[in-house]
Structures are given as structure tokens and as C-alpha cells.
Amino acid sequence: MYRLSKLKYVFPIGLLIAFFLDGALSNVFSGAFFSYPYSMVSHLVLLWLVLGYFFENEVQIPLTGFAVVTGIAFDLYYSGILGLFMVLFPLIIGLTRAIGKYFSPTFLTAIMIYFIDLAVFEFANYLAYMIIGIAHASFSSFLLYTLAPTLALNLVYFVVLYFPISLLYAHYNVEPRS
Amino acid sequence: MRKFFSNQRLVMIVVILVLCFGLMGGSVALRNRRSTPPLIQQFGNDIVGFTSTVVAYPVNAFQSGVNSLSELTNAYQENRLLKKQVTELAQVKVRNQTLTEENKQLKKELKLNHSLTDYTTVTASVMTRTPSSWQNQLIINKGETSGVTKNMPVLSGSGLVGRISEVNKTNSKVELLSDSNEASNRFAIQISNKSGKTVNGIITGYQKSTGLLLMGHVTSKVKVTKGTKVITSGMGGVTPKGLYVGKVAKVSEDDYGLAKKIYIKPATNFNNINIVTVAELDS
Image (cartoon, rainbow over all chains, first blue to last red; front, top):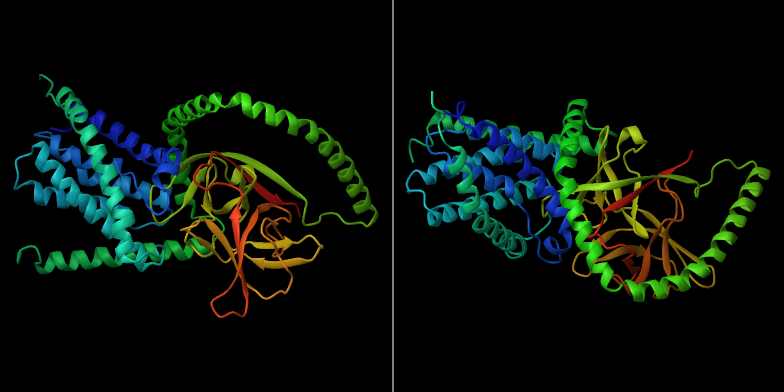
């Protein structure tokens, strides 16, 4: 039960920190992240949400709800264009669930699924911004200069943060004695 | 698969897609038209912005710590160079003061209250940057309550870096000159050469591969040499006159050979901005 678990505090706090770290890291390391022609986009929020699915076990975190709320905050605060991330975050959660149920959750399957999630996420982001006229990049340059570096950065995040976060969940994911 | 695309699901997906794109299109249109976003959006942004500082503060502190460490290593050299400049600066400052005084008196005599060079500034610090490869946007910690309004020019370091694109009560968004949005870098600028002749124009684009600003469609015959300083011209009535933009890097003919294209090296590196100054034209 999510409501009885200590994760009820830990999960939202982690989500909040991930949300703000995305922007803060993009600002602090903007020289490294956005050096021409490559641009790496930090997606710690996505990492936190997807890892939430892998580590929740019996707790059943209401991930879709959290995804919608963070999506709206992301739209309003970061991009100023409402409507994209509020749909995209829950979509990725759904995708992770759809693929994840066929595999037993190990590090290797998790990183594969996260890879697919990231690729779909970035592609949908590119497509939507292309349609409303914010992105002006050809598909090949998107693949080479945005998708590849972004995947690299976020997979590094994943490798570095997977075990610490799994320990965190193991520590807090204990049902209180009733 | 058949179950996935059942009728109900399909209708849901289409409705969500339409809603999503409607919202996106609507908010883009709204952003271009209105001076402030709807109240509910402002409210949300203010709350998020407030909590953002809590997380952004330690990260920024860490960065400034690293920066000061790296600066420490060449402090001695820099100090010697700067000392020389400081002595010259004192003279310039005094002269500047007297000229400003004189300017004020002359303006009074002419009964000229506000000219295009009179502006006040609001200093703000950068909270975060949009984590996106399609938008070059900063979020700064001053908003409507500090007198920031939409379309004000934003300076950092020694030159112009962008324009205010959205204003909330306590924070606002800045679109950098490097943003691909066409409205973000259309500033009226002018270049004066050594003989005092002036070329007027606007910034028409940003070349990502070289990091240079473009001033296109220049039909003037005035000769502009490399290294000439470029400033805003104050035309259009939103931007004050005399904000430093950068230096001319290259002059070339445009694709049809009829007009000139002037490439400008911006004075500030757009990827390392911590403190910004918002300039407000007095009126």
C-alpha cells in the first residue's frame, strides 16, 4: 500500500529534487551541455519516474498521477508552452509498464527499457515542437546532435544512480507493522 | 494489438492528441500576444519558482565555489593587468560624470525630458535554464513586482543577451539571442564606422555553427570594417539606445549579391550566464 509506506514522502521529495536539478544542472553546465553542435538534455525527472516503476514492488506508487502533475509543472515553468510534457510523461510511464511486464526487473532489462523510453520521449518532443514551429532541425541532425548525446548523458545518469536509488527504495520500501 | 486499438481507446487517443496540440498552439499564440500569461499560470510559476530556489541555491553555490577555485590560479596575472586598467578607469569615470552632468543640463535647456539613452536597470540572478535542446531560455528571479515587463532587453556581462519573453509576479523567462524563435533576436542595431557614418538595421538571425549574430539585408554603401562596435539603435521604442551588442566579425555579400550581410560576434558567451540586467526605457 502506497499510503502506508514511507515512500509516500520519499517519492514526491525525490521527484521535486529531480525536477529542479534538471533546470539547475542545465544552467550550471550549459557550457558543456549545449556546446555546439551537440545538445544534451538532462532528464532526471524521467529517470526518477521510470525507476519508481522498477522499484515500487508491492507499493503501487500512483505514477501516472505524479507524471501528469510534473508534466504540467514542467510545461508551465520551464518551456512556457502548455500541453506537451503533461501528456508525454504519463505516456512514457505507460510505455514502461507495457514493456516492463514482459521482463523480470534486473539492471540490464531496466537500462534497455529506459533507453527505449528516452528515444521515444526525445523523438515525440522533437516531432511536437517541429509541428508547432519551435524546433527547426532536420531529422538527421536531430538524431546525431540531440538524440545521441542526450541518450549518452541520461544513460550515464542511469548507471550512476541505479544502485543508490535501489538502496534508497530498499530502505524505505518496508511495510510498517500494524 | 487489436485490443489496443479498440474503438474507445482510439477515440481517447485522438481526443488527447487534439487537446494536446490545441493547448500547445494556443499557448504559443497566447505567449506572442499577451504581455503576461493568464493569472493561474503566473500563480503556478511563482510557487514553482519559489521552491526552485531551494534546490538551485546549493547547486549554484557549488558552481561558484568551483569557479572561484579556478580563478584563483591566475589571479596574480589578472590582478596586474586589471590594476593598469583601473587607473585609466578612474579618469574615464570622472570624465563620464562631468559629461553626464553636462548632458543633463543641456537636455534641461532643450526641455528634453527623456531621450532614448535614458534607462533604468533591474539586476536579477539566473535561477535555472530550460532543459531542452529546442529552447534557449533562462528563468530569472525578478518579475512584475520588480518592474519587469515583456520584451525588455536583457544584458549580461558586457553585452546584450536576450529579451524577456514571459513575466510572472516574481520570476520571468528570458529568451536568449541564440534561441531559434524568430521574435527573440530582432533588435534594432546600428554600426558607426570611424568616419562617423552609421549603418542601421536589425539582427536577423543567429548562426549556430559559428556563434555569430547576423545582420542581413544591409543595402547601405557605408564601409564597415572588422572589429567595429555594434550597439542597439533605440528604434522601435522598446529598447534603449546604446546597449552594447558585440563587434563586427565579418562582412560578406548575401546570396543574391545585392545586399550585404554583417556577422557580429556577441559580447557575451550565451552559455555562461549567472547574473543578468534587465534594461527598462524611461518614459
